[in-house]
Image 1 (tube, rainbow, N blue to C red):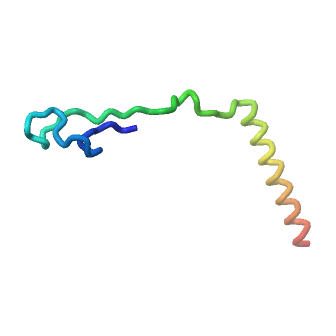
Image 2 (cartoon, helix red, strand yellow; image 1 turned 120 degrees about the vertical axis):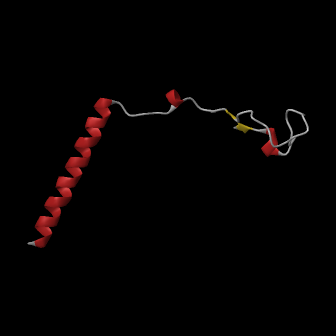
Image 3 (cartoon, helix red, strand yellow; image 1 turned 60 degrees about the horizontal axis):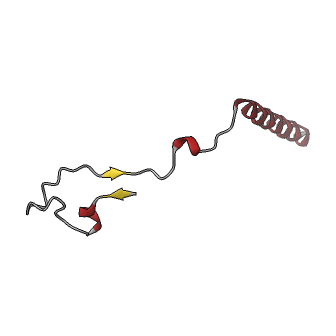
Length: 69
């Protein structure tokens, strides 16, 4: 969620000094999810996935070679 009231239409001059163009306040950015909450795959699972991919690729290559004969 980005909170910048000058962009939301709530008040073009948030510091109330009469000049809406001099707002030097940075826009606050709030992340709603922690990067630690994003699920990832572990190293053993990655090796299993690589093995399955290699097995599937070899199977497809063998099937293609047999079909071309």
